[in-house]
Each structure stands twice: as structure tokens, then as C-alpha cells.
Amino acid sequence: MEDLEIIAGLLRRDDSVLEALQEKYGARLFRLAGRFLSSREDAEEAVNDAWLRTWNTIPPQEPEHLFAYIAQLCRYAALEKVDWLTAKKRSATVVELTEELAQCLPDPAPQREAESRELGKALNGFLAALDREKRVLFLRRYWYGDSIRDIAARCSVGESKVKTTLFRLRRDLKNYLEKEGIAL
Image (tube, rainbow, N blue to C red; front, side, top):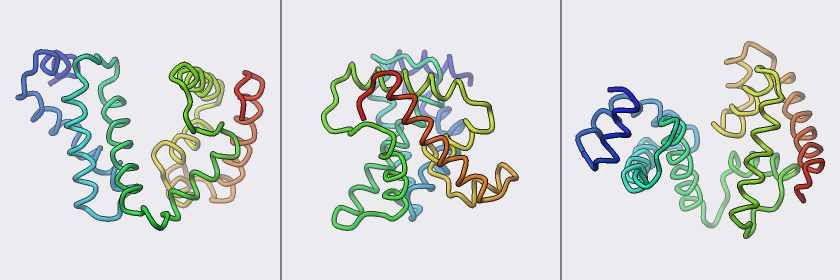
């Protein structure tokens, strides 16, 4: 079933499209959640939360890119589960990723919706200006949460190149955001 058919079914509240959605994207979402969560059960719970959130948000939302929309919901569900699991002690992976990006992103504490959209547009502009290799490295690290080792293997480059490139990208992102007038 094509994405447009699935979205149309969700808009009609036809629960039979959930099976098609699960069949088409279930494995990919499970792998995504598994990058953040160490147990199979927790990853399955995050994926199930993503299905529920999809059902609850379409309508009124009508995403242009269905997988990207559901992947974002799954990622949020997985990160919420990480927060819940590590309420007293922080996960080293999540803390490392957060600390790396905290150097170049503004404090997320209560930002208004308009500021969030502005930041999103700025990030999209920054990523659009990057060449494919740098964009892939950035997204693999900060969107998908891949380890340096996994990124290096996936992109057939050395770990030191990945680390150096990400360091420079964070610096460039910070400069870009400052030029865009986004307070850090």
C-alpha cells in the first residue's frame, strides 16, 4: 500500500491501514528505537507508542512524508523511554549526544512555538547547505543516534574523520545560528 493510500485511510479512521503501516515501516522503526533503547521490549514499546501517536495525530495532521513523520514520533517515544528508564542516572550515550549538540544549540527550556519553528528552519537551511557526506554524518549522529564506529563503518571512513567532521559541523552550526540571530 502506498503512503498516500495509508494517509487517506488514517484520515478516514480506517484501522485496517495500521497493518499496512506496520508491515511497511515496522522493522525500520524497530531498528531506530533499538539505537536508543537496549532492550527489545522497550524498543517494541516505543514503536507501539509511535503507532498510537500516528493514529492520534492523523487527522488533524496530514504529513507530506509519512515515514519521516512516523520516524520522528518513534524517536520521541524512544527518547522519552530513555528518560523514564534513566530518571535518576543518565545514559552515557544520550548525555554524550546532548552535550555535543548543547555547545551549538540554544537552551531548549521553554521556547515558544515560533522560536522552535525558527530554529527548525535554520537547521534545515544549515543542513541543505552541506554536501551529502557531511549531512549524512550529522544526521546519522544527531538524528539516528548512531555511534562514531557505526557511522565510520557505514560511510567507509575512519573514526577520526567522523569525529573531526562532527566537531567542525557543530562549530559551523553554532556560527550559522548566531548569524541567523538565534541566541545560544
